[in-house]
Length: 419
Image (cartoon, rainbow, N blue to C red; front, top):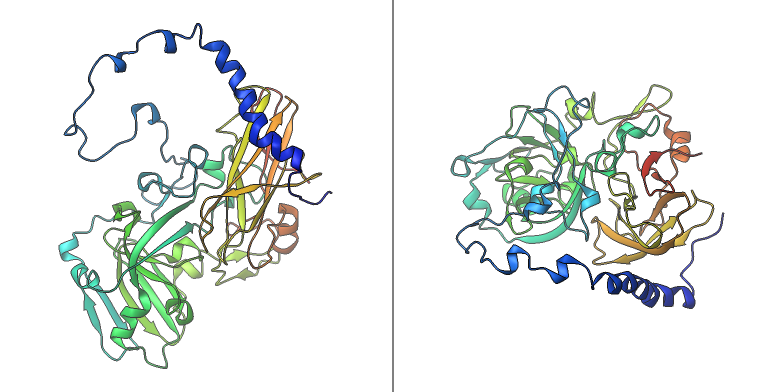
């Protein structure tokens, strides 16, 4: 297996000039007889809608296929289910609010902001209750973080199953959160020295609760009320949710209504019978909060096949780590025999998604595409076999193994597993 390396000078020259030149040749040939050039489409001759037609902006009608989708057989009911982000349709690192994946345990709670209250009780000097207006008076911070469900990729533990990165990796989104540092609110209440844990409780009908160690609560957690500049969507916890950077999404309690401080974890449903990692021995790991480094190629992928035939091709994907940044991503076109270093483009923020690209000239031969993330702690994303050596095949959660896509001679892409 060869080591990943930077493209050579000639390779860089090809990437900067060769792709562009190759792409211009067919475009020049088409210009003479292309009706899109020689004709007059209706939008060039007829005025469109005025500014009052769309008071809240919506995507183009030609992008109506870019939506969240569920897998009907995955859960018992849509009320307690998942809607996956269409990663293969997106670029950059920010997920549009209307495409952020959903995970509900009792459907979407529609909370009246005028009736919203957040209580802090337990091992505090003063039990407090905040209204939404109260929270808006505290100093605010803005941070871009990914939110990933611990079950993202969970159906792939036993083998390749879901054919599309929307379904294998789409339990994730990456947005800018605006909110108040949780530590500021706890300071207002006064944390007793005996307080070692915090219980976050949501206002939805599932009675969602999670235990969080005080070290994390006092570190970088936010009580957030906006995402990407606008109010949280109802499916994302409007009007207020907890943000627990780098840790599994189930802990980011939505419709946050209460924070109780105690001297030990509560061991509620979501940290005992659920969100624990079952090992081959039958013993379950608990409190596996941090999300390990992970990546996926979003195009080409099963929902984004190669349609242009052979020639210049752009491979792109996403990488992230719950422990820091992603300084490096390697990609392979041959199933791991040879690796090259991808180009990371855009902001590199801690506990946020990173966008990577690799431009190459496809010759029409079959490909086995993989990506491998390295995070700022030195951790390297493992293969599925390496992960199974430690964890077995019984897990549902925390599958951060390398994903493989097979590209056929026709450009069709399938989810496969190789040893």
